[in-house]
Structure formats: structure tokens, C-alpha cells
Amino acid sequence: MSSCLVSIALSVVFISQAEERVEADAGLKIQAAIKQLSSSDFATRKKASQLLWKQGLAAEPQLRAALKSPDGETRLRARKILRDFDYGILPGVDPGIAGLVRDFRDGQPQQRQAAFQQLLDKEQYATTERLIRLEKQPEVRRGSLSQLVQHPKAIGEFVEQSRIDALMEAVAADQNDDWRRTVTIQLMFSPKVLQYHTEKKQLKKIIALIENEKQDAARAQMLNTLSASPAIGSVIEQRQLAMLLTALKAEPNKRLRGQLLSRMY
Image: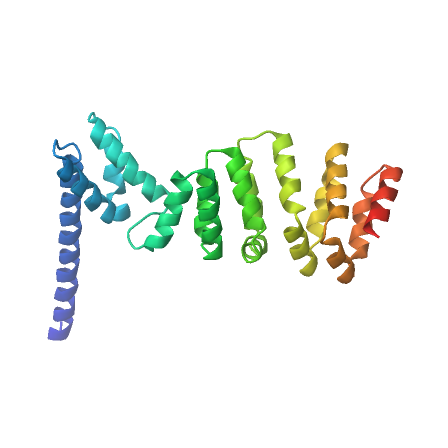
């Protein structure tokens, strides 16, 4: 083996050993900081918490284990750090974004709504999606998703990538069929969504919702919402009248069909 190859081989070994030492040192630091969470000294507990947060996801396994600690302070501080991790508040995240996430997570209703809007304005779509999925209150999930689909930039991002369907499922996961149906109508027949599908020549998806709806009252609500929507003008401009007629054909009540048709024109 040439001296050059030997040098390369030795370098690889040294680098690998150095990386292992760094990982081992970090593991020991995390372990020591976990123990310090139960210190009787407040400053020590605070410093340990800060160190563990700065370690990021590398500290997560030991923090999860600390949730089973017999010490209440250790469990409390570990849970608080992990909650930040779950919400994407990690080292390296812009402090302004982290602050908005905390405002949404911990704030009052108006503050939460304002924080969510700012995150949308800053195009933090992955963050807003995570917040919706983590939200415990069904009505807040629903309101946040409604806020998202009304945002001119966000709607394109989510509808184009079919992420809106998955989000709707997440929003309604723990609710009954009536609640799910109400959310579907509210969101999929909102002016922004209808406008988007019209401009992209994708109204078939909306029509399919109407055609597949078995409940008379829900189907009538969909058609009423569609016929009264400001987006109807755009549908006509985009020469998609055939789609509207297809939607109307799904309604078996002739009188209602006539009323809806006259309203559209």
C-alpha cells in the first residue's frame, strides 16, 4: 500500500474516532444536565434546561426517559423542553418565528389568530400546518384552517400539493360525520378555494363533492353556497358553465334546481 493510501486510511480512522468522542462528550453533557434538573438551586436548574434545549433533538431520547423520573421538577422541565421541540422551537430557528409559535401556542384567542396570520404572511407553511395538527381544540383547528385557505399565497401552496385534503382530515379526525361535512363545505366552497380551482380549470373536484353527497340537506347547502359565491363570475368568465350545469344535475329537486340556476344567472 502506498504511503498516500496509508495516510488517507489513517485520516479516516482519526476523523471517525474524533466524531465518536464528540458524540460521547455530548451524551455525557446531556446526562449531567438531566441530573441537574432536580437541583435544589434554581440557577442550576435553569442553566441545565437551557443547555438541554441547545442540544436540540440530540437530547430528545434522554429527555423522554426523564419524563419517568421520580422527581417532579425533572419531569416538569423535561416536558417543557420537549413541548418546544414538538412545536418546532429548536436551536437555529429564527427567534421571531419561534416567538410567533409561542404566541399561537400559549396566547389568548386574538393573539393566537394574529400570530397565525403573521406566520402565513411570512410563508411559514410547514409551521402553520404543524400548529393546526397539534391544536387540541376542534374549533381552533377549524378556524386556523379557514384562515389558511383565505390567504392568497397559502391557498395555492396547499391546494396545488393536495395538502389541503390531509389537513382537513387532521382537523376533523376526532369529530363526527356532520362536523366533518360542515368543515368540508365551509372550506372547499369558500370563495378563495373556488376561485383557485376555477382559474386552474380544476372544478371537477368540487363537482365530485356535490355528486357524491348522499345527504339531501348537505348537497343543497353545497349548491346554495356555490350559487351565491362571488367566484361564480369567475366561473362564467373562464367558460366553465358546463361544470355548473353538471353540479346542478346532481340535485334531484327540480324546483331547487330552477332557483339555483336563476340565482347564478
